[in-house]
Length: 314
Image (cartoon, rainbow, N blue to C red; front, top):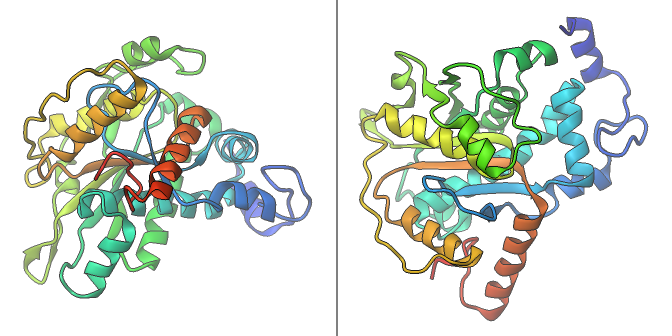
């Protein structure tokens, strides 16, 4: 278990960059650019699981971003939350804007709020829980720390935001590292639940006597197969939070034989979930789907077919 003096040293003493080892800085300019230099992007895993909510990532998982996440998560470099938290907040903001704005992106939603047409929803960040043994071994809960840092950043930006660590593991699960996609889904199936009597933390807040609505944003440091986020979303839906989880049946969208068709099918289903304000945001996603989706986004934007972060939405 880390001592308070180690946490204090992380925050105030000269250090080396968690990404590349450059001296006397927690994060150098180059590594910060790798983490925050590009806009957040909607991402899908290569095989889109049934029930996966829309996911937005801040960066691709690799090189400096991988090193920063591992330094924070496994080596207790707690000061990195001051950089990773805002990166996650950017992904959350983008994800919420897409959910509320129907795919119009952050700019349209922000303009609507500025013009007084909508007070904006309350953003509730729900961190994916870590196993108790892992938290004890690391001396901290990295995802919970990032969720709190991201919520603080969003509040500083004028959003009504808070973190709500309401999910818990029902029992022991295997470490996901080294498991393939099928094994990850089997390992996590039914593994999460909302803590008893914590549903109230997910209900819409009120402002001047009326509900402002709620967007529940599942947050994690990394998405690979989507298994963890899918199971967390299932647990939230199972809690049946009044005013948040009203859904409509999504139509079938034909053949889903390719990755792109599966992504479109998932996108259409997400669009037709009426008032189901569950979305997800991560610091990083696996490089291949991230880059595929970024390239697809650029292609669509250059062609002038869309002006949002979601290529399939027209």
